[in-house]
Amino acid sequence: MKNIISANGLKKIYHRGSEDVHAVDGINFDAAPGQMTAIIGPSGSGKTTLLNILGCLDNPSEGTLSVGGEEIFGGKNELSEKKLTGIRRRNFGYIFQKFYLIPTLTVLENIMLPSAFYRNCEVCKTPKEVLKQLGIENRAGHFPAELSGGEMQRVAIARALINSPKILLADEPTGNLDSKRADEIKEILRSLASGGITVIMVTHNLDLAKAADRIVEIRDGKIV
Amino acid sequence: MNIYSVAYKNLLRKKTRTALTAAGIALSAWVLATLLGFNRGYENGLNRDIDNMGFQVLLTAKGCPYEAATLMLKGGTGLRYMLEDVVKTVTSNPEVEGVTRMLMQGVFDPNKGENGAIAAYLGVDAQTYPKMKGYLEFKQGGWFTDNNAYEAVMGYEAAELEQREIGDKLLIPGLNTEIKVVGVLKRSGTQDDGTIFLPISAVQKIFSKQGKLTGLGIKVKKGADMDAFENRLYDLPDVQVVSMAQVKSTIMSLVTSAKVIVFAIAFIAVIIAMAGVVNTILMSVMERYGEIGILKSMGAMPMDIFRMIWAETAILCSIGGMAGIALSLATARAAEAAVRHFLPYTPNGDMIALDFNIAAGAFGLIVVGGLLSGIYPAWRAAHVRPLEAIRSEGE
Image 1 (tube, rainbow over the protein chains, first blue to last red):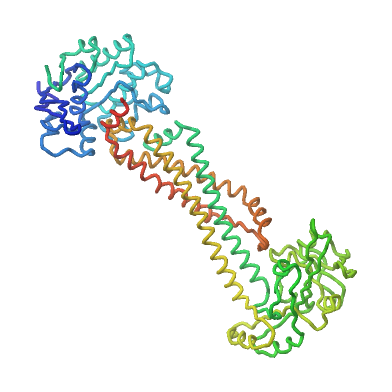
Image 2: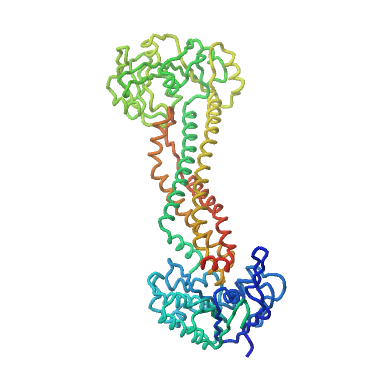
């Protein structure tokens, strides 16, 4: 199967004074549609930096990245924020350890938030559809403060799914949850991958990592 | 769900802060609208007072105060007199349509006000004065029967203050002279409202000023050469020529100077509001740094974020601006009363003329000022780099 995302020789070098820090050091990475990948490694190993580059939140210092056959990074010039935003709109959904829900918006409104920025989104799902998919239909009118941690993460996932992303990137999606809620999120991510969405997640949770189709371990910016 | 509803709900997160900022904007809008209304009302009032004098040129003795307000300010002193012969000289000019003789006198009335005050009497010609002041209407009674009668016509406010009706007696303090009130004028919105009119010959007799005048009102024929006429009057000895056009122009130039101060205060009010808006919105952007980063990671373009933050500014300014305008409309009469209390002379009529144009203008200025001040916070938010924002939130 053709890879939905493909990276070659990715490098990210930060300049800290006179010192060069190689946060990502020549990584090759591929993921097929519907594949669930867990990126693990110790703190500071470069896993989140890699996730950010894969998700077009950051430019690599070197290397190439293509998403859905479209070459995103490859030249020396960095892409503008506007171009990166366009790419993110078309391809990605993001979930984070902190849920980043807007406290004054209801669950339904939080889920619909991305659509406030899209004009004529043909691929966007209906909020009802994602609410049902995540099992939170009965919470549509509630505010984030009225939800449990697991429910908040479900809302964040629903929000990430509204624009029908091809790839879902998750940075420590269970970091703020107890083991029971973490299991629920694991099942949801697993079922999304089964539904054809490529899931790439960074996690310290080995139980969650084991649910992935493959585990990529990073140390010192390199895949080991 | 659109950017504007998100912006509105964002403002509800910190209700107290939003309310305080809106209150600051409202106060600025109130100051702005009230000052603009005052500026217009005062200018209109002065114009009206001058236009309603009924004559275009006033002749007075050199150095003589020529209207009641100045007489009051001078404590009833400083009156100078012209001889009545001047009437003949003036009426011999072809430009003159008519003249009216006036003799103003002031006496200290210990019973007036808390500490006593000057009571002013204007002696006018019963035949000519009413013709020139055609706009004066009577609430009760009418003009004096003749120029020698010991009778008075009271302006609306003078009658209210003295609590007199027709038939009542009026005592001139210190002179033990009683005069009978024969008429009370309706409110005219001019200085005449506060004036007590007496027949000119009676005033000359009561105050022992026979053959003397303090003023001669001159009505000029339409199309007459005013400059040539005024130049001839300037040649008359010991008189000063007060052209109403000149008075108007002098007062208006003073008003223009006052306007600069008024507009400076209004400008400061807008600047204060703008500073409050910048502070509030920028603080709000900083607090939501990570969240803005998330919105951008979800596909919000820089312009979307700019519009959202700018919309917050616009909503805040609109609410504050509307509240301020409503406040200025509600307090216009109280503000007017305060201004009248503190200013030694104020024209009659509405002194704070708040109309739709002024309200809309003040609202527009506040909103435009707010939008300008919202540019920087919106620009800052629009240029948040999602990764940095998310990373900083995680630290």
